[in-house]
Length: 557
Image (tube, rainbow, N blue to C red):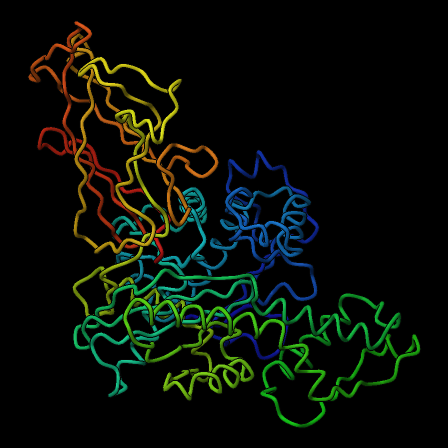
């Protein structure tokens, strides 16, 4: 585990994980120039524990999403708006910010690995890099992450060969890491399910897995995951807001004073220690508050502190209960365990609330100690890398699609569904037809087995006098609705990717349509295979594979 972080605060250098935060020291960069070079020089940037009191950009991974792909709560959140504003001031795009952070993290990791193993050994070792990504990241956002990784130098040419880059969603990484701990429990059997609650700084994501085999460490995703913006940062805001109400105008002090109080007395004090104890909590106010007429300190009673926690904790409890209900509906029984991970996952009060609610239902609530909740994603990413090798590791064999995937086509006219003015006569068979129908090859909520292809057959008619070397293309569309529409609705159906191939159609016999013209019928199959967080599309024409290309897709992984 790499630590030895550069830190402006005592006690942070050996923590298991550095904050995803970056500060540009007031730099206003030339965006187009920075775009071409990838980033600004390291001396102009501070990151992780090194940002100190500088106002840092956080949540910039989520900014890889287009605004239209964000939920309303994300789009309107103060944190997202502030992150955009800070990047705009620095002349940075979200991709550039991610590239800057990854470059600094990557260089720090390489430096420390070389200290441990030596430069010659490291230079001669092939690298397999797994990046954890939020569950909400879309195809386009993941592709931007690849661009950022390339600009960060992670994929630079090496004597040991190409670096292999792959992704794992944060909830799946958490599941991979926690299953290693859970399997040691004698009451965990094949067929049992468990819920992973990844409570981080911004979002709380939940995902549930069912155990396929305890001995070979195989899992399948049980129900579609869920999540919400109700992480630790909102708990911090509630503490500061209620403190401000107590102090009044005297709270109008410098951000440095506020940050010091938040770190010393909230982050490393009440927030970590509170679990509903019947006692008061002393908060020593900054001297500047005292100079403005505030008392030297505040005494926060149990009920006051509970009010701070309850807004966020109640939302997490609701998410957990919804996930438990979904598991019970799908499997016919309650999950065996709820595993808390992430920074907020180590919160004692969260554990107490969930345990009181679920212990009577014989559902274990597991909260690891020390740095384990904080480093869950890192450990899960390592296990993900192991699952792609011959070395033993936890494997997710089946996932649930969080989108529907399909193609647009012409269909027979149905007077019960279609308007008369949409009807036209088909050139091939003379039947009444309509455009813009959807055929969904994969529906949201479907189980997809990893590495096992899923095929859908179709055909396309082309003019017989088309070039023998036909430029064939097929657009794959997606929809996030629970029930995808039967027609192509531009409001909910959008492009995922386009498969393109040059086809030799010279050997296909021509047939005459009822319109008197000649056509060739191209029979093809769309083959889809889940590989990690990617959906691998292949085009099979008349039994011959002519195109395949891995596309990062929105699977619930």
